Image 1 (tube, rainbow, N blue to C red):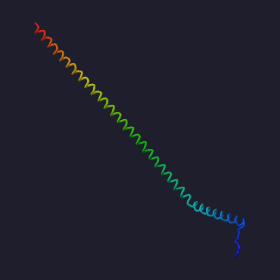
Image 2: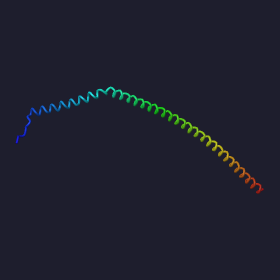
Image 3: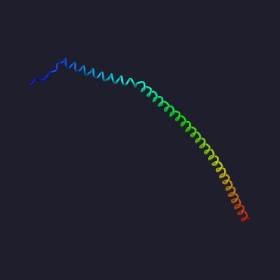
Image 4: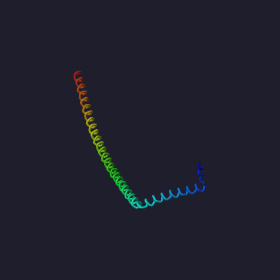
Length: 126
């Protein structure tokens, strides 16, 4: 039986160097292949980035328009509320004036009734 073939240190060093060289060559081949489509990929990325920026600008403009619309609606609602409060205040003032007139009329009627009773009592005493 033949003995086991032992590898020497230099053999192992050479095998490692060959493996590293093979890996390096593989990476260089991939890099060369990727360089071929690099310009196209960069152009595509720039196009996508420009489209993304355009969509962002559109969203920002839409937000501004929406904010302006909401501000106008809020101002209109506040104006309507203010007008409603004024109308309510006017109607309350008119109602208070009407109640005051009724109270005065009721007082005048009560005074007239009291005076009539007083005059009747005086007439009975004579």
